[in-house]
Image 1 (cartoon, rainbow, N blue to C red):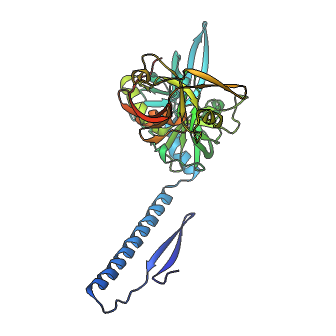
Image 2 (tube, rainbow, N blue to C red):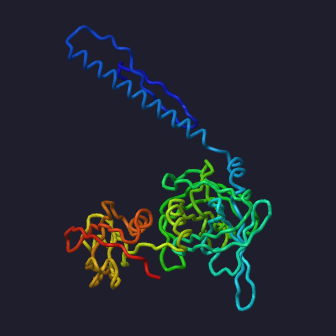
Image 3 (cartoon, rainbow, N blue to C red):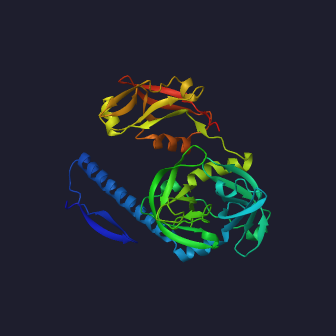
Length: 387
């Protein structure tokens, strides 16, 4: 090690931080320039030390915010509700149960769209057992988010804080609270298994940017909160991947980043207008890359351009012929999207996540496309997604 400093290790929680403390300098007699250079070096070392001290203080602060599962449950349970619904089916009343959480003191409750859609009667039950009839305020089937409202006692309205799902990391511990199989106030825990999943939905459009978790989520958990270890909501539990209809280790949640973007509009307008490009196609896999003469299997090949869509207005081109390689047909001739607004596109998920996170109807979006072996840029104006 350089003799100009010494290492000191400090452990904060499970994080080890090393600080470099500069050794004492004995400034020799010499020119003013030499003295100035040595003083600058000392100042730089002092700044480095202060930055590392600030890092430790931030780590200590974050560590102090972490709660136990018991604390999280006690903090959050009053804001989690049971949502019962009734639907008329050929004259018979069919009942269902889901979960939800208090969004604000005005009585707005967040749940899944599929929990309340087509409901003829919706009842919200709080922790103390008191129930209220709820009014459906807004539904967005494209993200499976629903908002209902109750005129409940203000003392019962305990809004849960909305966290930032963009900070989540794979392996981070989380917990879910809801009413699986109608068992009110149940808690499960696990980790973030993956981020940015694409979840098929009954709307005909996939839900992008979905959180995957191994926390047990079962029928009845739908609409309940997924919380981080500070007790902040990072997602709405919405679906499971299962062949039996029960939890098998893979659950999905709509990220809080999506909730924060869409819910205020659902409350004020009753609906949310999603931006739309108007294309269909396929991700570039190794075989397709070989057919197209690409070095890497990256990008999204446009096969179909919808008439009178933003894509057609901008002059994007879909595939116009097919070739057969090793007995398999491939569509070629269409534009290949390589980047959106300066961000590389590996597959369609990247485009859909970008639309979901930062774009709204009327925004412009720049596409970098590969056409006839040449790269060019096209700007499209996003329109409202058709039903």
